[in-house]
Length: 159
Length: 200
Image (tube, rainbow over all chains, first blue to last red):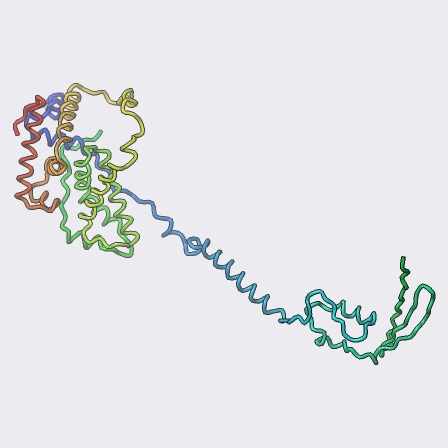
C-alpha cells in the first residue's frame, strides 16, 4: 500500500461513534507516555543531625551558659548583711581622724566587727599636742605599733 | 513525533500485590515505585482528564499524585494499604482543588494572547478536519456529567472492559454497562443535534 494512502487511512476519522471516541481519547493521551516523576530528596533527610538542629542547639547552649554563669557568679561572692545604710560612715570609738580614715576604707556593706585589725580601744591610741598657733592646732597620734599621724586642726574664722 | 498505534494497556494489578509492595519500608525502592507508576498512571490520568478534559492538566495532576505517593513512602508516615485507591483519591482531590485555584480563576494570559503563536508543524487538511471534529466532541463531552466522562475515558481511552471499570470505580459490572450505554446514547444525541451523525 502506498505510504500516502496508509497515512490517509490512519488519520481518517472513524465513521462510528466508538471509533471516534477511541481516536479522540488516544489523541488526547500523552505520546510518549511521561516517565515516573523523580522527587528531589528532601533536605531534611539528607542533612546530618547537627545541620538540621544547629539553630536550636545554639539557642539551648546560650540559655544554658547564661543560667549556669549567673548561678556560679552568685555563689562566688559571700552573702553580707548591711548594718548601716549603704554609704553611711560607722561612727564608733573615739572620733579621731585615723578612725574616720579607717572607716572610709571599709565597704559600706561590710560589718566592722568582721575586720580583724579594728578594735575600738582608746587605750591603743596616744594623742600628743604638738603645736598651737592662733590659727590652728596640731596633734600627733601614736598607736601602739608606733605609727604616728599628724593632725592639723584649723580654726575657721566666722565672717 | 512518535505516535503509538494504540494505548499501552496497563496491567491492572491487584490490590494485594500493591499492598505488599507499597507497604511502608525503611528504604522505599525506586523499582517498586516505577512498577506502580507503570501500572496505574494511565488510570490516574484518565480520571483527571475526565474531570477537566485537559490533557496537560491531567498529566500534571497525575505526576503530582505520584510525587506525593513517593514522598509519603519516603517519610514513612501514614501507611498506604491500597496505593491504587490512594492515588485515585489524591488525583480526584487535586482535580477538585484545581477548580478553586487562582490560576484557573484568573489565568495568566487572556486566550487571545496566544492567537498569534504558530505551531512549528504545518497542519495538513486531515488534521484540520480531525481537530474540528474533536473540538465538537470535546464540547459535547463537557456537557456530560463527570461520571459519564469517567466511564467513556476508561472505556475508550484505556480500553478497559466493564469488569475493570467496575473494579476501578467500585461499582458492579451491570451498572457499568448501563452507565456506558446511557452515556453513549446521550453523546450521540447531542452530536446529532449539532449536525454530526454517528451510529451510537
